Length: 143
Image 1 (cartoon, rainbow, N blue to C red):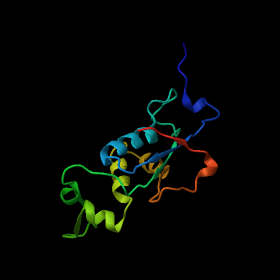
Image 2 (cartoon, rainbow, N blue to C red):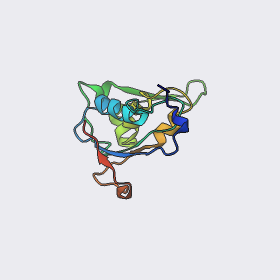
Image 3 (tube, rainbow, N blue to C red):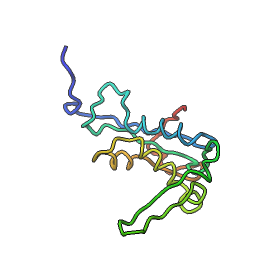
Image 4 (cartoon, rainbow, N blue to C red):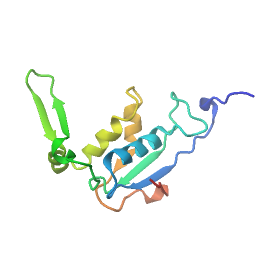
């Protein structure tokens, strides 16, 4: 039995999936999205081949968090100048950039290599319940 090299495949069919994040837990929805973006369950999976699918997340700012994470979970940014560390908790981040928390959660679950930016480019975050990607015929992804 020969091993199939995914690079030799002529056509890679990319699918579009749609996820509604409303009332879902942040960590659980981020792991499902990261698995679809990486898509390790595919038969022709290879870590070096770009055969990832697209994910559209509706209501990306209306997720739930457990315990006191709205006030306790901190996000840090640094400008690489001495003493210029900025910090914000989750509630402040949701006011400034509503989709950034979900994007960071998914980003931290993807591999830390050159392909991460390409995977995140296939993640489409929308803060309302409708999207502009109906021409791609997205499939509903059950969580």
